[in-house]
Structures are given as C-alpha cells and as structure tokens.
Image (cartoon, one colour):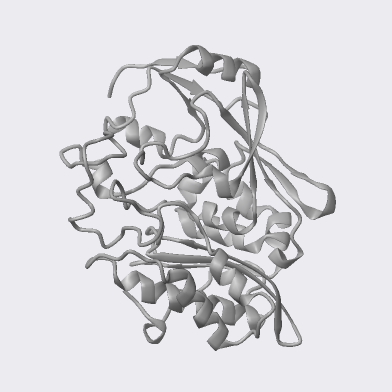
Length: 346
C-alpha cells in the first residue's frame, strides 16, 4: 500500500477545502470499499480525509413524507429506521440483501453510492481494464463474463454496478446532495451514475472535489407497496445476478402507478422506463408483467457467459410484480425469497 497523509476535519467546510487543495485526496466514510482498493493498489490516494466525525449521520423527515438521509448514516441504521420500513420498504430490503451485518454496521449511504465494480478483471492488475487503466482494453468482453452487464455496456466496459441500495434509490427517484467550495449541488439519481461509453473510469457525475452530504427521498405513496427481490448464486451475501426494486399500485385491476429498477444486469442502477411506460394504465396481469419485462430487456447485448440473465431478469420482474399485485410485497419481515427453479434460475 502506498503511504498516505491522514486528515480528520472538524466540519464539512474543512473537508471540502482539504480536497479542493489536494487533487490526490480521497474522502473516507466507512471504508468498506476504499480500504480494499487501497490494499490492492487500485486506489492510491495521497491523502485520506476521514469524514467520520462530521454531523452527517441523521435521518430527517421532509414535508409530505419524504426523508433526508445524511451521507454518513450507516446502512444498518437506515435499514432499521421505522420510517424507511413503512414508507420505502424496498430500500430497507435492498440494504439487508446487500451485505453482512458487520459490513452494514460500517458502510455509509454516501460510500454505497460511490462503491466501485466487483468485476474480477478490475481487481486483477494483470488483466486489461479500462476502469482501472484508461485505454488498456477490457478483458471481460471476450473473457469470463457470467456476472457482467447485458444493458448499458460499451466496447470499453461491461462491468455491472454492484450496489443493491442504489437500485432501490433509482426506483425511488432519489436526489443526491453534494457540497464543494463552489456551493451545494443537487443531482438526480438518474443522472448520478454514468454509463461507461468511452470513459468507463468516470463512473459518476460527482466532481473530484465534491462531497456527498445527503440523499433525499421524495414523497412517494406507491413506495409503501414495494419490495426488493435479489437472485444470486448463494444466499450468503453474494452480489446479484439479477435484482428488482419494484413498487406497484393497482385499482380495479389497472396499474395506476409503478416504479421499477434493475440491478445485476447493467453498468449502472437501471431504471426500467420502458417497462413502466407499458405497464402504466394497463391491466395488472401476468401477461402484462412479462410483456413489459421483455420490452425492457429487448436491447440487451448478451455474450455466451451472461445470456441467461435476460430470461432470469424477465422472470424476476414478473414474479416481483405478481407478488405485489397479490398483496405480498408489504413490510420487511423476512427477506424476499429468491426465485425457485420453476421461475428460472442461473
């Protein structure tokens, strides 16, 4: 590990000033991703700016039923917050599906937004990876790509985004608040994570000197009827092969509101806009759910290793919406079950 300087600022102003003055500085929250990357020699900051003493660890109510979540709120605390469980159950479920209890006790909301891919080629410094070394190439495209993206990829990168929490945030239209010496900026979650294009090393819209200070969840009545469903190789905290964050409102057999986002299949948390468009105002039926899922997955760019993901994603979307339509999606008591063999597996 490269030697680095260490700074623990007393307030937010001091933190952003420190990074503005040092292009080689990096913010440290829970450290569950950054420390691993430093140990592997992938991240090599000149200065680590420790944020843990800053007053960014509270959840506040917003008018109408929304929530403002401080960037240093621990994942475990957010999942356990009764307001989250009641108003945004998909978010609580996504966090609980995302990691072990020990990691949730350390990981922060801001850090979760910024966690980097778990692509094995990214971590293997002997492999070509445009995220790690721009212009090097992408060994995943012609290599072992079972865990890789079928949506949103490019000729430069097909690495999936690893976060469960961010999939729920995408479905909930969250807004990221960032602070720098230039002031405060609000970034819609749909614009926060960037597709790889020709610059896969540029992963978010956040400037290098900006600090995430909060995430806001706007009021959403439909979100109270939501769930997060994750399909993985093993139940013991594996990353998603496919995941679905969904909220559904049905009146007289007609879909009157719907939110849908996918994880494990795309280079960013994937908001399923086409599926939502087809579902809204239509029948709440198994056929409609499957048709919407097929339309969303139609642009998929598959490879031999990950072609199974399209069928698995269609089945997972349909199963999640069906459960919500039947009134099985409320609350967080018990984790949502993964798909059975008859619904489609890897």
